[in-house]
Image 1 (cartoon, rainbow, N blue to C red):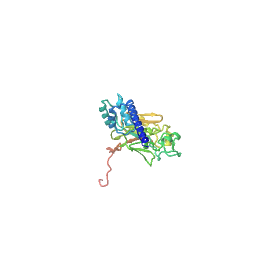
Image 2 (image 1 turned 60 degrees about the vertical axis):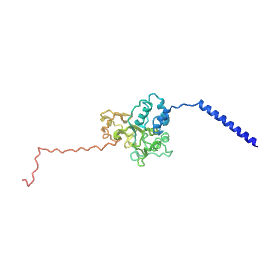
Image 3 (image 1 turned 90 degrees about the vertical axis):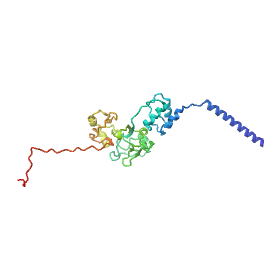
Image 4 (image 1 turned 45 degrees about the vertical axis):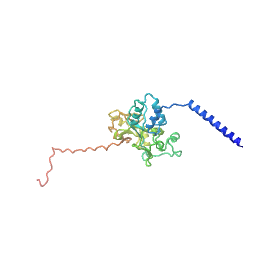
Length: 296
């Protein structure tokens, strides 16, 4: 009995030693060297793992930054210019400074202006709804209202408005990661420059139908009338497929296009209310004043 136990112990010890030797040999044979700069760069990245940089995570982005000679096209939208400057100092490489951007909703067709004409009873997902139905309204370009973008946002920068049925973007929390843009099957969300005081002017409509059809589907749809294009002094507005688009780079935020839009599909954010000009009444000097009975 004692000999069998001792034999078993010796056998297990031998097997353990052999396994340890094999593992040691394999680890040395297939050892992969990792540049210590990768860990150093990863430490200064925001660890959001949002994929807004084009990489699946912050570590893979750090590897790309270290292993790429020219990183001027690489950018971390969450960390912004401050983080990229630190990366440039560590790697001794040049980075391009980019203007901060923020997500905007290019649809304002809420329940009050875009009535439902059908009822969808499938899974509550914009991605699935877009594949099997054109939506619950006559607008085949508008927001589906199932909140895929809100679910995708990792920074709590979006929520669904119960009254309108549309997602709302909290600008102060938006990190410009672009995940919501990818999550929207109708490409309604767009990243636009975040100007001083977050001043923005954009067409909040994606409907490419002709004016009458678009207006029947949604009261605030762009009808392609070109009035905004005609009045723009900087040629920042283009008309494509019955739809106006304002180029954020060319736009000087003059606001001339906003009041001429007959359907109010152009949105302006954070601007002060327009000043009302006081009209002075001119006194006709040629008219003699009427004399009262007391003067007579």
